[in-house]
Length: 86
Image (cartoon, rainbow, N blue to C red; front, side, top):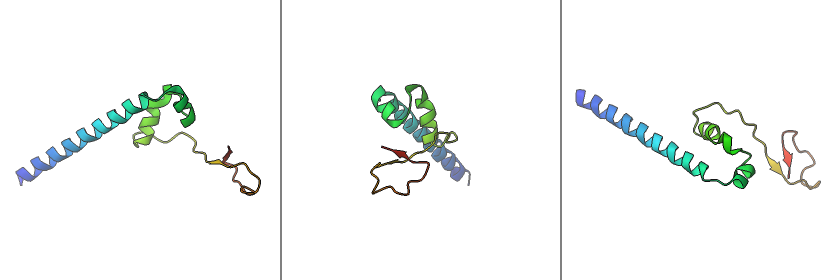
């Protein structure tokens, strides 16, 4: 029984370490984004840490999600109010 507990603790520690490394890698990749790409994503470079935390589920999601739609009148006669025309 004690060896099972030791294995379980070791497995949890390895999983936590792997999660930490994955978050670090994602954060590093976000920091490599140029300002234009950040703008296209709707994120300022100063918000990258917050954006990463929300994406990983480590913080409440506070950003408003919008859907970009085609602004042609034929396709969007009943466009919901929360959408943004392209």
